Structures are given as C-alpha cells and as structure tokens.
Amino acid sequence: MKNLLSMDEVSKEEIMLILKRAAEFESGAKPQLEKEYFIANLFFEPSTRTKTSFESAERKIGATVIPFDAGFSSVLKGETLYDTVKTIQQSGIDAVVIRHKQDAYYEELLEGLDVSIINAGDGAGQHPSQSLLDLYTIFKEFGKFEGVNVTIAGDVSHSRVAKSDATALTTLGANVNFVCPPEWQGEYEAHQDWDQLIEKSDVIMLLRVQHEREAAYDGFTVESYRERYGLTEEREKMMKDKAIIMHPAPINRGVEIDSSLVECERSRIFSQMRNGLFIRMAILEHILKGRG
Ligand code: CP
Image (tube, rainbow, N blue to C red; front, side):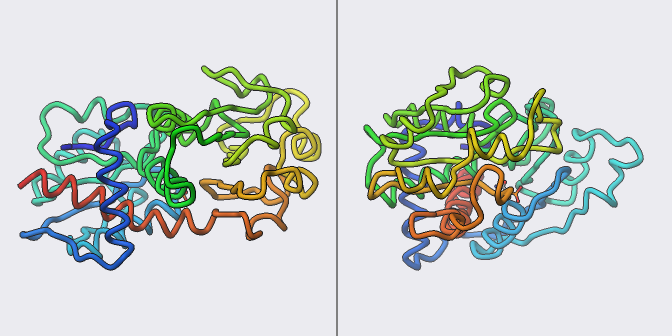
C-alpha cells in the first residue's frame, strides 16, 4: 500500500492485517522500521483527534514529524496543494497526512509526486483512518464483523465517516442500516423507524450534525432533531444488553446524543479515540515499510 486514500481501495485482507498490527501495538509490540522516516501533517480543516493522534502515532513508531501550519503556509499566497506537497517532498519528506475541505483532493496528487499520501478526511468524501479505528473498536467488542448489525444515525450525506464505514463494514459482512432525515440520506436509503432499529442493533453509530457545512434542512431545530433522531436516555434503554454506542466526535452534546450517555457504560466514544492511536501506528508502519 503506497497511499491510504479511501476505504474503497482497501482490501479485506489489508484491513485485517492493519487491525492485527494495531492489536499488537496495543499489547506493547515495538515498531519495525529500519530507517528514519519524515512525515508532515497538512491540516487545512480543523481537527483535534485525528491530528494529535497521527502526530503521536508518528512519534511512537520512531518517525520524525516536520511541523506544518496551514494557516501560516504559502497556500495563503495562492500556492496550489500540488505545489505545496511537491515543495515538502524536496525537504526529504516520505509521507504526508492531509485533511482538506475538497472532496477527493488527492486525485491531483497522484501523478508527479513520490510521497505517500494518507487521507485524514476529504470534504464529504472519505476518512479512512477513522474507519479503520471504528472497525478495530467493533472487532475488539464482537470478535467478528459477519452478521453484526450496525446502525448509522445522523447527517449521512455530509459524513465522510458514514461513507468510509458503510463501505468497509459491508465488505466485511456486517449489516449496515441508516437512520436520518430524508434530506441527509445522500446515496443511501434511510429507515425512518429509529426505535425498531435500536432494538436490533449491536452498534449504534451516531454522526455529528455538521453545522459548518450548512447541514440544516428546512424546519431543523436542535429540539426537533434530538426528539426524532437523537440517542436519548429513553432510546438507550431500548438497546440490546451488549450493544455499544459509537461516535467519531466531536460531539454535539444534547443534539445527536444526550450528554449523560457520552460516557455511559455502553459508550465506546473515548475508547475509539484511544484505538485510533494504535490503528494509526499500524497504518503508518505498513505504508512506510512498503516504501523500503
Ligand atoms: N473524528 C475526527 O475526525 O475528529 P477531528 O475532526 O477532531 O479530527
């Protein structure tokens, strides 16, 4: 694997390899890189989890992190993304982790560059490292994907997490359902009977209402959304005994999930973030080893 761009391009075998290596890292395995690698993190959209998690993973596998601040880069003078990455490559960088608001921004980087590209989120496209950490979280819980019922609830059309997870989970044999307002179902067919889905789900994955992407529809209010589509304390009581709650975060407390449920017993929301560290170590090691 030279790049990690989209879950559409990651095979079942590669997914399982990365999950296995993440588990080894979680159990204390040492990284297996035989030379020094240099990595830069180019975040053109805000991030707390993904950026810090990648930076930490890069240091833990022994790579050198070269600071890059998009807000003080020559992109502000009009430099293109291609020229920015090509410039960084001249400093001896082996891999770049990029988050960008443009869907599939990476397509313009596939010719003429020798660095590895790890997509940390492209617009409303894909978020493959988040997807892999979600898969790791589910696999740790159930030990399988086949037959696991996953309900993804919320702003599906704007969510790169929903698209990445739907692709990967379906490939791995899970049953994926969506619940959201019709305006937000995008390419998927959403169920409207939330309560019925809750009762049969093993995983409830909530998505953030993305206010910054003008996600609101006619008639949207926080109260009406919470009542119709939110995971409320009442709905949590309807979940199966062993069912878990996930959310890629950041969370709008009191909108898509009641604040009291964020750290409840069945919530794996903060475990997902922890799992992200091991998954990103596994992704980086896999890609860098492949570069030789
Ligand atoms: N889940 C996620 O991508 O969070 P950040 O936007 O904080 O990186």
